[in-house]
Amino acid sequence: MLVVLLVWRHFVRRFPLRYDPLYWGAVFPLGMYTVATQQMAEAMDLGFLQLIPQVFVYVAIVAWAVTFASLLASLWNGLMHWARRGAAG
Image 1 (spheres, one colour):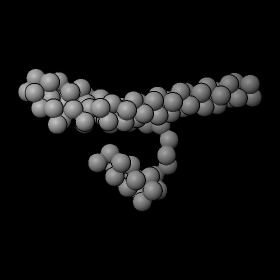
Image 2 (cartoon, rainbow, N blue to C red):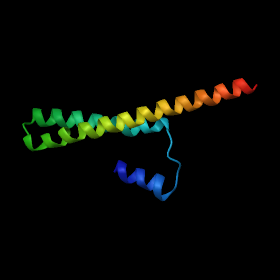
Image 3 (cartoon, helix red, strand yellow):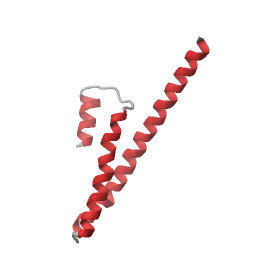
Image 4 (cartoon, helix red, strand yellow):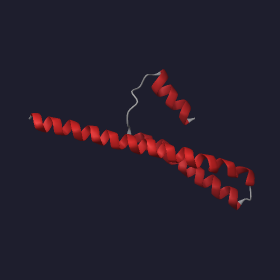
């Protein structure tokens, strides 16, 4: 669902692809559902569910890394903009 919303927002509606703090609200559930599914599969002895956390742990890590890199880039761009304004003024 997150991928569908990403495509709709940025490619269909043409919203600029840049950092937004609200993206952490999309990243957090990926990790939480991964851990919760792992714990449920172990507690209820549902081995067939083990595939989900084994795959989604990497999805969650990539989503976190992309969001974090985007945060750092946004901070860097803001710092450079602030430095240019300070040098000009």
